[in-house]
Amino acid sequence: MKLAIEELARLPGVWRGGELEHAIHETVATGHAVLDRELPAGGWPLGTLSEVLHDGVGIGEVTFLAGALAQAARDARMLVWVNPPHIPYAPALAEAGLPLECCTVIEPAHREDALWSAEQALRSGACGAVLLWLANAMPGESRARTDDYAWLRRLQMAAQAGRSMAVLFRSTAAESSSTPAHLRVVLTRSADALELRIPKRRGPPLVVPIRIDLRSRTRAPMLEPRGAPQATPVPVPADHARPLPRIAA
Image 1: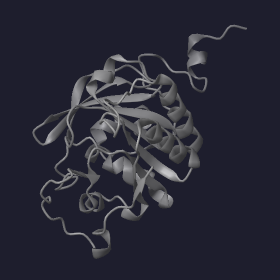
Image 2: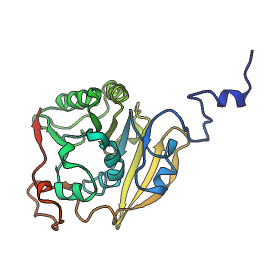
Image 3: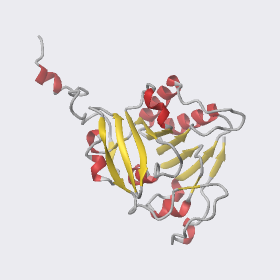
C-alpha cells in the first residue's frame, strides 16, 4: 500500500527538506537561544560529528561552544582536546563553567595519531566531548590534510558509538569539500561577536548569518598562545589554577 506524503513525513528519521529535523540525535543547549533555534532538535548534537570552519585562531571558535561543552561534561564525562593550536587556558575554562578535572589535552606526534586518539576517545564512551584540530601542521609534516572522508566517517561512527559530542575544527577552505558530518558551521569574527552561517544541517542551510555575543562568556580567551603574555587574570578557585593534564600520543 502506498503511503501519502504526510504519512511518510511522520516516520522516524524522515523530514521535509525545507524543515529542520527534530528527532534523530540527542542534543545539548549551547547557551545561545538564537543559535539553538537554528539547530535541529534545538541544540548542539551528541552522538555525531560536527565541523566548525573558521580562519585564524582565538576568534571565539571554542568560546561559543562553552555552554554545550559544560552540558556534555555532566556526570563527570571527559572533555578531550586533541592537537589544539594553543594551550587551553584553565582560568577561562573554569570561568565558563567547564570542569577542569574532566579536561585532558592530547598532543599527538602525527596526523594519524591525532585521528586515532580522537577515534578511541569518542568510542570509549567516557567522553562527553572530543575537540579535534587538524588544520595546524604537526611535526614532520609540511601541511595537515583534512579531506580524508574515510577517516571522518570513522569519527562519525565512533561518536555515535560513544554518544559523544565530536567537533572538528577546520579552515573555511573545507567548505567546498564533502563531509559525513551532520552539522557544519562557518564562523567569522565581528567586534565582540561571532557571525555564524550553517551551510549543512538536517534541514535547509542557514545562509544569512546570525550574531552571537561572546562578552558574557569569558573575559579571557580559552586558547592561550604558547609564549604569549599571560591573559588578564581571572579569579578562580585555587585548585582550578593548575595546568590541564597533557598526554603525548
